[in-house]
Image 1 (cartoon, rainbow, N blue to C red):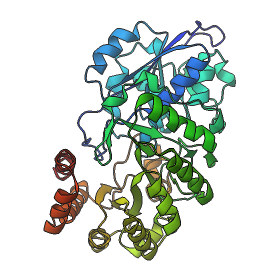
Image 2 (image 1 turned 60 degrees about the vertical axis):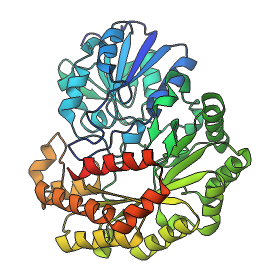
Image 3 (image 1 turned 90 degrees about the horizontal axis):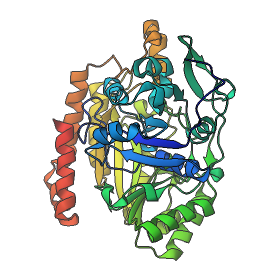
Image 4 (image 1 turned 30 degrees about the vertical axis):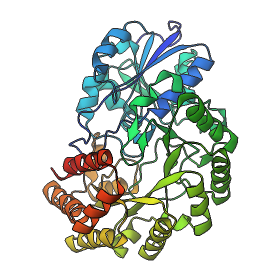
Length: 459
């Protein structure tokens, strides 16, 4: 790289969310849903407020995104490629080689990178892509500072190569969510986004960032060092903009724990209920943080689905995850949600250290006994930055030098874990009673989409 003191003035920025092949990635079985790239939309709005010309390419919905990137990339001062928009911060795709191929579509002198992969492996990403800079962690304020010409050496939260050595300027400062503008809905076509479990004209909303719990498997390097809440009036303004101006009809409040602050959640729900929008939504939260009154107001506000991380049906394995919840609390929360008339999606994982086939069979049986509307089964990924990865590298010191993803805990073979996840999907979804209940409850289009997803996981 040349001198860090003199840099061309930046006037235009192209923000790119690359597409990933297939609705379900082969590595790690990650969903590649057509969900709006919320973090790019917020960055775009922030840059526009400060006088920059911005455009978004979203490969999740644009099949010709590569051609458009090659064509438009020459017309913008900088191309910012994300390896993981906000909905993939917690569980990013595992195909690093695929991302490197995407990055090579951009001249290195124009390329900046943000997302979980660069945050975890900044030097690898810099050297493999030739990018000028990698943004570490939360991207919004850092990207604005970069575009505004801040001295890189004095800007926390970035990494770059200087005379072939990596310079890491330290951790970014936690940003104030209240300073973030309404996402740039005008830069995407909302009609192209959907969630098969909820509906079309789908949007994402973020009311808080971070989580106070210390689950061993949870990757939180993108979320800052502490929990922060967006002012309720700011969040509601985003929903107003999306629903009234852009015709959003379904949405996901993608906070790691939507009901973490019960009083705040009640306020949001009562305000949404008063608006009587043609808008339905979902969220994710813990099964032990819902109660009848809260669920009542969530339903009145338009909540139709809640995601719950159950993880395991073995009490011993659940304790090991440090999630701080027991099976009885999970059962109670799911039952209360069903009683309130809200659908449930439960997420389970296989491959924790010390987990046996018997433990996994208990998880399968527990999923059937909970009988949520939907169930999803995945293999545990020991992401760098998690307690699981720390435990693994302490046992295997050589792995601490590995600068790539370990796709599963090595005490189990990939073949065995694949076998157990396939078995879990079949045992849950191929029950005659379940099939009949879904045929009665879902429209034909929704049912076909569910079958496509099921097929993607069991093959």
